[in-house]
Image 1 (cartoon, rainbow, N blue to C red):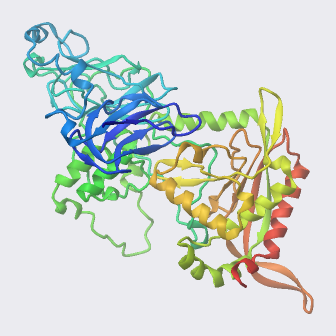
Image 2 (image 1 turned 90 degrees about the vertical axis):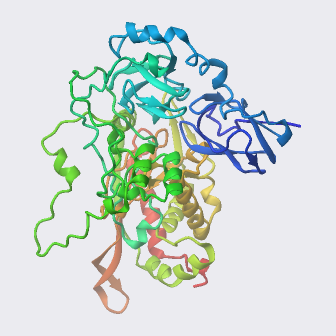
Image 3 (image 1 turned 60 degrees about the vertical axis):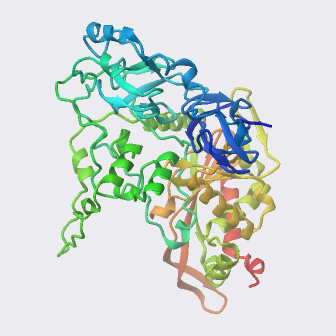
Length: 588
């Protein structure tokens, strides 16, 4: 008896998902809980497992289809029930693939289609699919195929960029790209036609049209997201400066098509150069999985996608390229203390002007909104963490052996902050601007900013007040690891009442972090440094000693939290940390 596989609920605010990649084909054997398909939403990418063991009989949703929670994705049953020789996508044959095959009318388009931008080529229309419930349009970032090129089913045709995600639109059928309807940088609505794919005999003679992007600014525009080198103590959890829960890769938004040029721009097929590490680039789960399968080191690839993003084709090219191509960038050790040379990417940007990417525009909008709706100020205290340093020195190796995570300074700071939030509920509140109300939470749900290849994410540790330092260390290690792997659910990213960010991992002493709305405060931790301090000794009186010092900064919303409230909160955190009374938990 067959079983339907439906799209499960992926979080309270998620009502639909987009099929990113089928991991099994029709006729494949699957086990219970074996991953069938990758689903992407506005918040996370996740895999849907099979609820039963059996054979994949039917696929109801093609890749890039957007479906509602509860809709059927596939059918699992006994092997005997499997349809003979069906292609994996069950819906595609019903609508489009039949059209391009054996269609005599396809001789007309070759005659009637003078240019790739207009004309009436007969074939299958490739439309902009739904990319999420709040996404109504997308911008053409880059055409991956030219008119006249042969394409396979599900082969990427074009890169589309939206406020939330960059994605590739695949061909629904095999054939020839007959016509391109949207130029690069054009913004089009969901459902509009991007291109026509049909029989090769109908293709216009040698048309390489809308590759119109003369100066291809995307190629040099690689923004390596620096993962700042951190002190051993602070880098272990990899938290970084937040401000907004921006978690989407970005493309460029353009309103007008560039002036055409006879020179076709180098396409994505250009073999990636073995150059500087691309560690800061966002890589989709599909591309990462392909790289693992092909044994390709992503850090050795220069992406040809929007903003230097590594695409599927880049990985395939790198896998096909001889290993020798990676040798040229051999070690060049500078012989003297000469000034460091700028990287090729940095040198290429000097003296140029480029459009802001979609991600930068989105971040700018959210940061500006946060500053506009709330009256933000930042208060700073200096904290002596010497006693905690001594506890860590004694306990951290044993703690890591027993728990599998590092005992950094962050759990101690989080514990002190949670206790202070219980004393000062104003700092743990949220504001509803429209209703004109403040809600004081009865629990402490702490957002921890984590820097990832995809961008800054802020997973939330729920009910942090119920955890001791060890429990917080385990939770922080867990959410940081799952965030970097892309294993978070949407619920992991919502519900925070207070946020902590570690900008000190890059050596910054203090900063003024921006509040995550609708919260009213965010705590920033600076770099830990050794500094001579005046100490008072019972026997010696005032003396100078070297101490482990850190700045803590609290940005607060003055609409609810006064300066005195912020000062009292920071003083409570400082006092708790400096007394260092955490040893009993570690048997010290």
